[in-house]
Image (cartoon, each protein chain N blue to C red):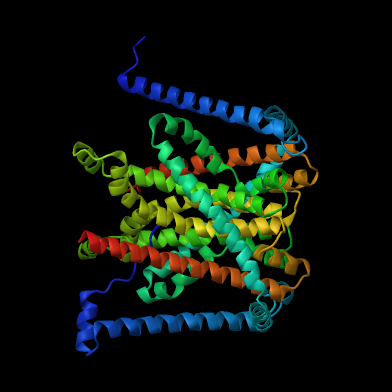
Length: 266
Length: 281
């Protein structure tokens, strides 16, 4: 049996340290939750961690957790996908057309970015109802301006000298776009997507709560709160947190891996 | 959010301006007028599209028409009702930001310590991942159906932005300068005042620019969920009464306020950059 190399030993030590860190912090949070907070608040509204994890276990075994998570994820990812595609298209249109086009249209994108998206919920409720569509549209409204702005920054920070050099070497517009613009912009787009993905989840959950639905994780939080079932509310919250964390970590890592594979990382 | 780049004045533009007998400043003013004119044209076209589209495309019961919306907006402004609601919303936001900023900054400073950072980092990571919109239910239970639950919700949303901004600021502090100051006998307070504080201001100003729209959105959400008073409550009441014109009027007002505040913050940030740039040169 060969001894572990220095690198392997370093990786193992780092992994152990990471696990120890999370276990330590998990214990602190559990202690605060179980011994400091819960005894002081009625069990109708705020449950002990054990009860919450039992509830989550029940939901996992009877399929409720998957059904709730899939509804919320579907809204978040549908809105995210549509918003990202729209954002990239609009940014490319603004960025590659004459500068004056960007100067005219960018304030509208900024205005949409700064507007509190929940303000559109009443309009969407009257227009589209309280089903899947208005929730996905709300996510699109949250995602689209962020992706547009990040993509525009990527396009605008492209070194013009390099573009001139490509032209001098006889590259076509398609070649400049694919060999220069795309790799440069892809990093910014990926960063924007990683930044906005948690917001997409939060928007989907917030919309479910405000629309007063019974579907999705937000809908479950809403209905359990109406029934004064703190255990249910916290269980839905814990599942949402785990999902958001997995999305941030998973999608960010996947995007970086795809960039690396495509040779697009800067 | 990444900083948006300003259009650059090129040497070619200056030469063209000079050849046309126009000064640099006049050329700039002319361009601004053209851009604003085009923006106004786009707004007019959007309003015309909104006003004359068939109901099958833009349903009147949902979004009304520009005329009634404008009329309701004017009524709300002239009666002062909307400003009263704005004041309530703004007060809650300011209360939350005034607490969140120092707390976030303090946590960021504490996290710069190795042991504290080791303990704090996972807690903050999980805290950041929690969908804050779901916490309102818990806050209502603990704090009651009043503005306190709104303030705490906004606080718990915004505090992470200041935390990460302070972490970034501390990581960018020039360690060589700090070492040099310490070698010359500077105290920790002196180092903090001379190096750390000036280095922290730009990221914290940037964090405020990100935090304020987020705080605004969270407060509107809290007011829609827990109707006490404010713009969200106004919006909710008009929706409940199925008054599309008033609902849209309030929505436009809220979006306009958010945009104006962002413009002022952006201008303030640019002014600060300009001042510090002049001092450095």
